[in-house]
Length: 401
Image (cartoon, rainbow, N blue to C red; front, side, top):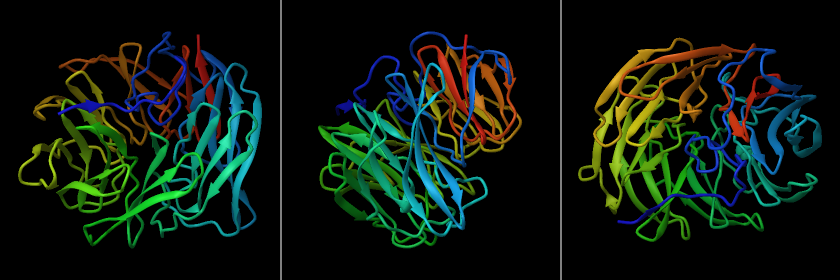
């Protein structure tokens, strides 16, 4: 079985999508500070209008964010570009306005999916409220797609993933959930595949992973009461695993011939499934399952054959990715939504109230340092060229030496 990981075309300092250039949370390049505060090692701090939990995306010296700004009874859904060196606003584009603000979960925002940057294009997604391609240089809208209509419950959260000119996205609403692919050049919907399992509760918020397995690009899309992999070209469901669950959030991890994913929010469990099957592989391809300490929101971080993750209520763990055997479990404290990141040879966990914990990777738990800034911090930090870009509910920080 051949397995090829998905990369975007990028420069060495780019962080062009959720969880970085390889979508794995690994930081390369110059070291970033491991100590900061509201003032220490802050190169700049700028207010961001409205509210959004999308992570920053960085390309060619520019930082891109989405946000939702209250506008009467409705919202102005916007994409902003900042100069990475100075924090200066380069452009601020309204992608779409809506007259009535939809209801969402108190932890969510109306701008939670992270932008994708490739070459001179920025792709932004606001769930059922629309998807767009903007010019990265001037913010002009090149296309707007409002055809992926579905009734979200608690808002939207999953980010698109770009591969071979196609944007793959999950649209799991309260009824009739589906997975779709959109042409990146034109914004045309290429396919919509209804979920094959009729679940009692059908909503989820997952960011898919795309990997080429045996020469086929497969969209790895956990969803209601099952996990399914779809052919990126046609939308055909290739295989599935049955497991009850809903409100799925973490992005699947693909490595070592496995896909590791979460299948439930209320009673989270991590599952590892061997790649290469077809049809219903529930009884034949499940490698391991793990409930204790499993995350509902943060995506796990893989370093070699060790999988690190943190539960929403602050329990961090390290397990063997091949067997699920646990090396350690420790309480960090706090509540977590941001995904852990591997930077400076250490692992960064950021909780929802601005408290960060660095640990040393390994089979024993070793805390190295703690930092904090004020405000709510649900977005995963981004890194580029020796700087960390950290978003709170009010500000965007550049942390740098």
